[in-house]
Image (tube, rainbow, N blue to C red; front, side, top):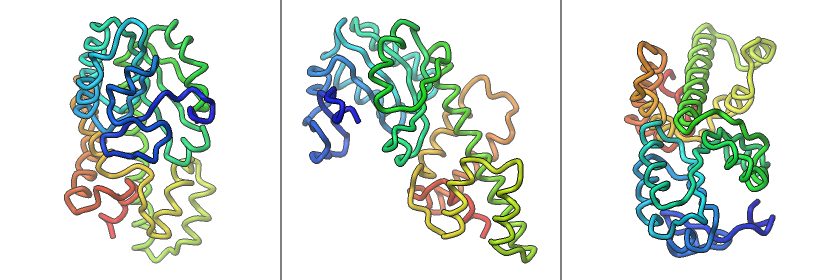
Amino acid sequence: HYETAGVLAGTWNRTPQPDFPQWKNSAATVASQANIIQIAVADPAAVQSVLEAILTSLDNTKIVVQSSTIDPESADKFRTQVLATGARYLECPFTGSKPAAEAKQTVFYQGGDEALIAELDPVLSLISAHRIRIGDHRQACALKLAMNLNVSAQMQGFSEALTLCRRAGIGNEVFQNAIERNTTYSGLLQLKWPQVRDEDYAPFFSIKHMHKDMRLAEGMPEVGDLQLLALVRERLATAEANGLGDEDFAALFKLLK
C-alpha cells in the first residue's frame, strides 16, 4: 500500500526478499533514505538487531515507528536508544492477519506523543482501518499482548467445546448451527472454525509467534495471578514442542484430538 501511494523509500527483510517493492540490501540503507522507518519483526531480539544496524543512520529528521509485538520493558530500552540519536519514536504494534493487511483492515495501537501520532496519521492511514491512541509506549505494548491473550484463550475454549461435542457424537453441522447462534460467536471464530473443520492450519498467525507473545505477557510485572494466561502459554508450549510451531494457532485444537 505504501508503494501504491508513492511514499515507499525502501524495504528490507532479515531473510532476503529481493522481489519486495523498493528492496534494499541493508536496513541501514533504508534508514538513510527514509524519513519514517517502520519496524515489524518477530521479537525483541530481532528489533534490537535492526536498531543496531540503523542507529548510525538516525538523526533529528527521522521517526522510528516500532510495530513489532514486544513487551513494555523492551519498548523502554528501544525508545531510549532511538531518542539518544535525536530521532523520534512511536510504539505502534498492530493486529490483523495477512489478508486483513492486504485489505487495509489492520488496527494500530499507538502509544506516545500525541503530536507525533497526529503527524503520522496520514501515512499510517494508508495501510490501516483504525488507529487507536492508547497512552504511552508501555501501554501500547501491554494492550497488544492483552489482545493476543484474549484470542489465544478464545481459541483454547473453542477447541475444548468442539472436542466435547465430538466426543458426545455431535457432528460438525449441528455444532456450527449452534455456535453461529451463540453469544460467544466472534470474528475470531468466523476465521478459525473453517480452518479447524477443514483441518487446514496454514498460518495466518503461527503457534510459535503466539507462544512468544504469551511468554512476553507472562513476564510483565502486572501479571499477578492471571491463571488463564499461564494455561494458554503452557498449551502453546506443548503445541510447539509437538512440532506445530509453524502452523496457525488454531492448531491448538490438534492437541485434543
